[in-house]
Image (tube, rainbow, N blue to C red):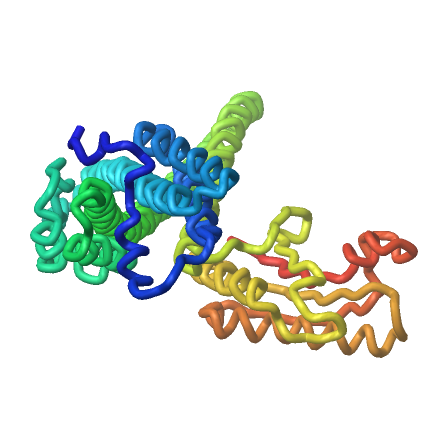
Length: 424
């Protein structure tokens, strides 16, 4: 540890405030400095500094306790010095913790991107030019801060920490000799905090770039899987067609002997059932992947879906519209963009939209509102790219409730728009 770090805590950091208030007859009570130190310690504690910068955080807590004790004893100068020291130590602990967390997160995302690129057979991108971790040097404060400003990779990063470091360095010019160790310690901590903060922010900026790359790779992987599923479904369809033709040929051939025909038909029926199950499973996988692709492309979730005798039924709840209105909310618009993409890539054959209301109000108004909402959903789907499929829209008013209109919960269930999708 540098000798300046080991200097007695009650000698630190008087310089900065003394210079700022030079010429004043007296300084105000250090309540602001104490509050700032408390906030800095709290911020470092919440940011995993106990794990990554335990020594600095322990010193900051000790200095804060000493500052509070000095304040209680009316030793305001000691309280001010200790509070400023605690704030600098806590800020350094917070910066060190942020750098450690950013390094781990960046390395994890790099591995994930590399693994996904390898799985997809995509050449890895050229590695980004990132700054090296700050060297554990002491002193040369002005030169280190100048090097930080000259590094184009760190442009625009850790601006607040750099200002604090510059203020601490400028204070060294007028500090008294007995205050020199405390001022040096302040400058060291502020410069080190600026170096670590800039390094952490540079890593986070590149991690954001890697996150975007990872999302694009995930989308490509989903599209490839969907294409493979479609190819498999087509292969199974052709295979089923050939089997069906073979079944017919064998049935005609076995007509001369009823028993033989029955035995052959039973065997082939079992094979056809198995093949139909495979074809159904392949189609379901294709639709599942199409739903995933739609959500990735649209950046929004599909509306809740269930299957019944009518087909796939997607439901927009009543909160998709303002009360009594037919204007879609932003969230519902996102849901419908995803649904429009799904209708396109899944090759849906028909879509029927049915608007429903609760029983509040008169029947004519409810019928008109349900029709306007159904029309709004149809317009959103067409605008989202589902114009190639036939889409019908109809309002049902309050004639088809699914809940008890005598309760608020039941009425909420009844206010809905159902999008019924028919697939091949």
